[in-house]
Image (cartoon, rainbow, N blue to C red; front, top):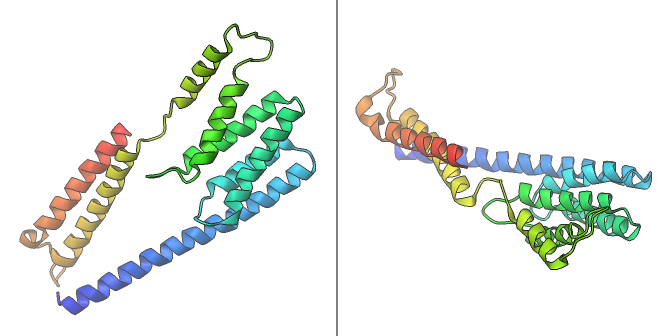
Length: 215
């Protein structure tokens, strides 16, 4: 295969990747705005649980710089603060759990909304100090226990998520090498030229399987 053909194929592949990312971003923005409209409607009719559900859905449709994400967090925080001020502790807790859940669901190698996550943890721990109908003999101990419970995070760890992505890329790249280099013009597999691609595919599949199992 000529170098020119390889460059053309690489350019087409890169273009497809960029178009795919653009399409996913556009879909996230469109769906996030729709969810915020639904949240607005629910909030205006005093349906706080419904407003929370849609605001969290908007926040989860993450796209860097998208306005609906920030508005989703603002809506959840506003419901939490307002509900606590009105003595609606359960609604306030549900709102802070929504903030926490949205922040964790959009976590990758970093946490885009780390400040919101920390604020939700602090408020949930504070609200848990004195459950309804239960007096806490030691508020500091109750706070420490609540924070300890919130510190548990069952979402996949970042290193294994990285291994998962690397494994997928290796497997996909290996299959691409097999297709480009290991297949003759007659459509037959040339094992000698396909060895590298096959090895990368197997390595990628092994890493992907390991990451899924451990994550």
